[in-house]
Image: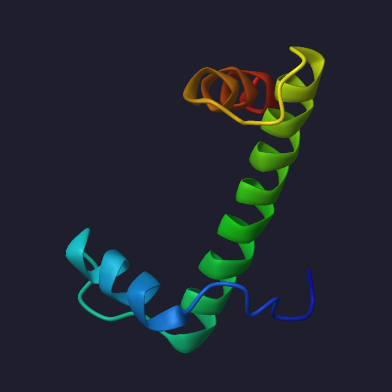
Length: 74
């Protein structure tokens, strides 16, 4: 993806990367992390919504998210 989606705030993501061990994180790295995370969460939520609809529900439950994760990562 060439454009920043700006869906996620960058400061908390930078803090997360630092908390996980990074000494320094460039702005570009944080933006790329944000883009990849947004892509993943978008795919995960779309699949979870599909599973909920298939089950006749309007509400996504934790099992939908777990099943969606298994489906999109396999």
